[in-house]
Amino acid sequence: MFALAIAAGLAAPMAATAGGMNGDHAENRKRFIVKAILIAGTMLVMMATANAADISTKYHGGVAWDVYVTGEIKPGDDERFSRVTRQLPSSAVVMLNSPGGDVAAGLGIGEEISARQFETAVSDLCASVCGLIWLAGSHRMMVEDARIGFHAAFYLNGQVSSNANAVIGAYLNRLGFSYTTIEFLTYASPDSMQWLTNDQATRYFDAWVFPKLKKPTSVQRPNVWMTAIGTIAIAIFLLGAWKKGMAFGWLRLWNMIPPAVPAGKLTAFDKVLLSVTAMPVLLLAIIMGALVFH
Figure (cartoon, rainbow, N blue to C red):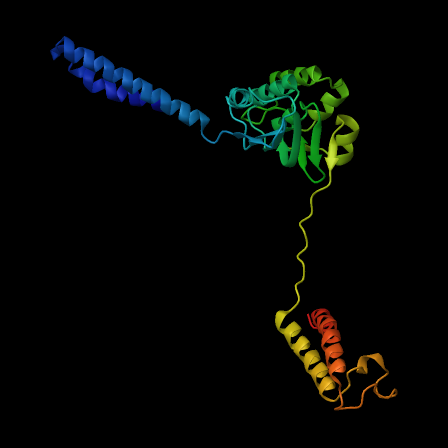
């Protein structure tokens, strides 16, 4: 109505002066009116598709494709889904994240998924008609804490729609589900939700339930300043031992065993040996300092 009003508003001034126009002016008027109607029609399409579900694809190499359906399902989303997935192989996985939406469009997406043998997966929320879409997958997958819910179809006034529920029953029957399962899926009233448990998903719908990926715990890094202070303290201790001639002090039990070389009388060989052995000791001191003083 909004778009038609725009077209009428644009055409009215032209019609008022139609009697005084020649043929060229009349032709221009017609072209103007046609353009106005086309603009109005475009606005209608934009208004109808506003806030529609986001449907996109992601390629992972080989024949691995993901199809993402996110947001509320709107009329026409089934046609968009068909266009977006037209060239994809049957190995594609449809990732669903939606609170539900239009029943006809949702069932249309489900029919397309079933015909193309796509797999379906839910990691967060998939309720109402989105749950019916999930059931159409050749393999149904979910994360263990995903919320997949079902309830009876209803009109905008909240009343149960027997016609829509009959269509849903026929849809589920074509997918191969029993009458008992169909009753379970449409049992909840429009103002409530039948949430699927992990056990129900695996027992009744052959779903693959995957554990939720945990965020990696942060690795505690050593305190740089404490490590440096500890390393310097150990290095000073070793330097003092060297100056006192305790070249082999770490090989004896403190002062109970006489030093191998008298203090202050290190030979050239002793100094070379001390230099060689000091490197691994210093490295060990740095490691110990990092562990003890972090």
